[in-house]
Structure formats: structure tokens, C-alpha cells
Image 1 (cartoon, helix red, strand yellow):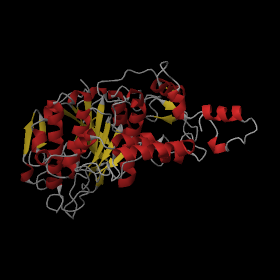
Image 2: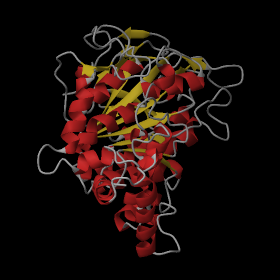
Image 3: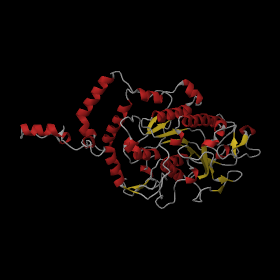
Image 4: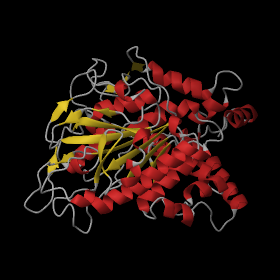
Length: 460
């Protein structure tokens, strides 16, 4: 019941029974924003409210990217067979076809298309993982901190923090969620942040399901309106708790995806385009990511997963091996970079690819490679200087011989996280005191003490 109806009842019958508690007039989030009128914009007030709970250091961000495509490679690719290639006599097969391209030793037999594009991306070779357990390290890569730490259980995905920060920039025409997770069922969620910042998870390659129903759009709109009339007071700023409020957020997000041809065009892949991207799930996800950014309807952070890299056995000859998985990555990523560049979007889009750790330089008795802390990271676009290699390892890839950047230490996932934030113009030193434990949630842990920070040397 709204305030006007309530006052009318009481004016006509002062002795009338007052509405029940749940039907009382109250100041909801929705009525708050409706009442703002032509004064201060709601997004501005929301941003100010968030900022009031946060502290930060004064920093200069790179601020050249508008979007991020974050490619997680679960299973941990072998760095010495890919982006830190080492030709080991008697171990590395000749079919890897090593060649020196732009001064970089490259496995043309594994990643030929990317080999022809080395001028378009940068490589980090002095990266080292904190952990060698798959699930732990995969989570670490997505939240930029120790999952077993004090705030590990409530820490949001990097993409959720981006969605929070970019929320004030959303326009009425932005119908897609800010954070998409394509083929990423294991994507970490929003942590303690509101559900509106959660990743929208979908398997790419077909039209988005359930965006129409048998009732027809007019009847659907009527039913949705009736639902709001009946139970908005239970869904918004709900006495039932955050889960009910979150459900309202889900409904509002879903509403923007219904009966919308733009949404269908983003998530539908043409057969010819799919073929160019490799004709597989990863390629389709890269294609959908490109279409989502080109549509410019709200998506700003896209996470994509390509697993299958846990090659403890037969790394060169197994059913899934470094050649088969390398081709999938090579086809999809090279097509994505090429299309973004051709559309003028690569300069505005930071593309990151990273596994959870690397693999041993030595080959095991099972003809595979085990878990290893040294790894690589790939970055392109968003201000990254193409053709640049940061850091170096020894002849076998077993140890770092040159850190390659001003902090003069190994690069960790927290530094990559800080680089993502900085590229987007986000202050990575933010500490927000609205976490449930009131400990202060740091966007990048210890960055206020200037330990972890952006890898500025990678940016031109």
C-alpha cells in the first residue's frame, strides 16, 4: 500500500483498522529512487553511498580500458610449452615447431595463429602462484586473495567488484548484466556484495533460453505488474531479509532480457562465425563475448573458462593434450583479438588469460607434467604494449632469472588483479568497511601498504 492510499483510508475513517505491518507505507529502495526527480541522479547517490564507506590511497590509474575479458584456464597450462616456451632436447617434440618471432621463441606447432599476432599482446613470465591445489588456486585467481584467509569466504569475484564500480555508469539502454560468465560454471559469485553484482552464468553457443513464454509479451507484462502490486513490500527492503531483496533484483535483471531481439543477437552464433572461432564451446564463448561488447548494452566484464590442462600423463600424445587444447585456445583467442582490433574495441578492452599455476619443467615417468608454481599470464588491449615480455626464466623454465618490473619481485595474481582495476580506472587501494565482519574489505590486499600493485611496465 502506498502513502496516498494509506492517508485516504485514515482521512475517511479515522477509526479504521490500520494496515498490517507488512502492508504499511514505507520508504523502499524503489520509492527512494522514484522520488529523486530531476535533482541528484540515483546512480550518483548510490556511488556516493558506496564511496562514503570506503577509504583509499591517492593513485594514478591507467584508465584506458572500458571492458575486460578474463579467460581462466583451469587445470593449469604448461608454461614451458606455451607462453614461456622452452625447447628441451629429448623431451619437447619437434612438432612443436619452435620459431623466433619478434625476438620471442614461439611454439608455432601449438599456437600458430597467436604466433602471428605477438605484436598485439604482452606476456608476463615472472608470475608465480601462491598455491598448487586446483580449486584453491582457481578461486584465488578470481578473487585476488587467499580463499582461506579471513575474508576469503565472502570475497567477491574481480568481475563483481568491476560491476559494483561501473554500476553508476549504466544507462537505461544497458539491458545485459555488467558481469557475464560464459562456460564458467565454477565462476565465483559476488561474495558479500549484493546479488545484482553476481555473474550471469550461461553456456555460450545458442540463443538465450526462456526469454519468451506461451502467454505472450502483453500477458507476461500484465502478470509481472500484478506481482509487483501484490508483494513489492515483501520483496524490496524486505522484512524477510536479503534473500527476498535479491530475488527482486533477479526479477528486474531477467525482465530486461525478455522479448528482446538485441539479447537474442548477442547470444546467437552464426555457423560461419563459429567455424572461424574454432567451432567449439570455447570459441563460441569468445564470439559471444565479442558480440556482447560490440552491442554496447551493459556487459563490461566477461569471464570465459577453458579447462582440460591438467596433463599429468601423455602431455604430447593423450586424447586431450597440449596440441589439441592449444589449438582450441589458439583458434578462439586469435579470432577474438583480431575481431576486437578490427572493430576498434581492442584498445578499450583488456583481455587477460591465466591459469591457476604452471607445470613442471621436467617430464614425469607418465610422460606428463605435474603442478608447478611458476606460470605465465597473457594480456592484450586496454593500453597493453603489444610485443612486450615482462620477466624471464632460465633455460628450463624452472626459476625466474629476471622479474622484469619495478617492484623487483615475482608477479602474483594480486598484481594482475590490481592491473585489471587500474586499466579500468578503478582505485585498487580501496578499503570498504561494509563487509559483514567490519574488518575492511580491500580491493587488493595490502595494496594500501604498496606491496601489490599494477604492472605498469606492461602498459605503453
